[in-house]
Image (cartoon, rainbow, N blue to C red):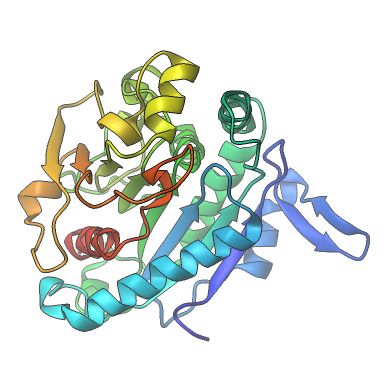
Length: 327
């Protein structure tokens, strides 16, 4: 099996997990979720890192698969070219689950609002939070334990990272917040507590389509969530989807345009680094990290601007740095 293998997981508009049957796609009963994951998703022994990616607005199932393969190709190339920047990654062999959901609409203000509301409703009133949360829990118990001292010395320790783009970031935040029922655990300087439903080693939110105060107003429980690593969010002032469209839809700019605003803990602000410049631990070891990618995410035609210009070598470099510092 190739390390670039991607395993798609499809959700319906209510956030239910779909499985393929002779009669066509149908929702998996809630009581069968873990059995279904065990049948379809088994982290292989060769994997060093498990990635869960949730796409964003205006993305077809085929485009989502293409995007993830592109990101994996960029990370593989970056690691091959500059392995000395990631001394703890020996080697880098990711295994990826792609969560796909119905995110397409007309490229209009009404279409933007419709998908925004769908992403929120799928999680808060539908089943997406529980499905994604149980997927993360399944992967957590199925992976080799990276917290065990005997594992840290070799490649068998598997680290879990979640990645979202646009409205997909909302689905991820809701899912991780769903499991937030204990004291704070966010931040690499905080040890992993026992008895959690899962523990995520890093969360990378690319051009998040949510208000700047979302972490304080909508996702406050992320401060208590089972996250061992940081919440890292990129932004670019060339992103018209979370700038112009978000401003019209919600009367304020979004995180993907202006960065994280208020949050339950201090927000660290840094600039996205070039692929040859390392990220020091001090740059990323914070509860919330806002990354200015305005010099990197610059290209894009149409009403969304650079909203989907996140598949860049610099993004791969940031992801690898997060994986490296998770060790």
